[in-house]
Length: 225
Image (cartoon, rainbow, N blue to C red; front, side, top):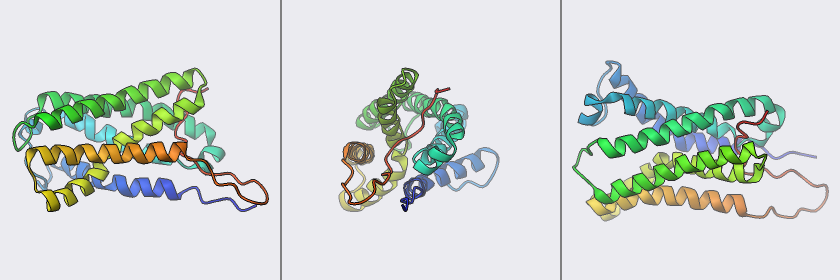
C-alpha cells in the first residue's frame, strides 16, 4: 500500500508563512542595529519590547505549527509532536496577546483606523481564545475539538501571509483608503478560517481496494503525557 505524501501541506504553509517570517526578520535586524529596510514605526522605536515578543513568538508559532500538520511526522515522532505542542501553545498566546497590546497602544503610520482596530481586536482575541480552548480540550482527552481549535488558531496566526496578497491585490483594485485597508486585512483572516473549516469538515473520498490513510488537518496534541 502506497502512502500519500504528508509534507505537501506543511511545505505550503511554510511558503505562505515565509512572507511574515522575512518581514519579521528584517525588523529584528533593524532592532539589533542593522540597516533599515522597512518603513519607520515610531511606536516600535519608543517601545520595542511588545513587537520583539510578537515577532519572535509569531515566527516560531508559524514554523513549528506547520510541522504539526504532517501526519507522517506525528506517526513516526509522537514524542516530538507532543513536546513541540507544549511550545506552540505559549508561543501562540504570546503572539496573540502582544498583538492585542500593540493594537491598543501602538500608533499606525497613517493615523488611527477605528475599523482596523476592531478587526485586530476581534481576531487576536479569537486566536488567544482558540488556543486556550484547544489546550483545555486536550487536557480532557478531547482530541477532535483540540485539533479543530488549534487549526483555527493557526489559521488566524497565518493571516499575515495571506494579507500580503489581499492587501497587494486589493490596493491595486480598490486603492488604499482607510476602510478598504481594514477590509483587506480582515478578508485574509476570513479566507484562512474558511479554508480551515472546509478542510476540517470535508469527508474523505471513498476509494476502492485497501483502505488508505487520508492526511487531515490534525495539529499538535499539546499537553498529553
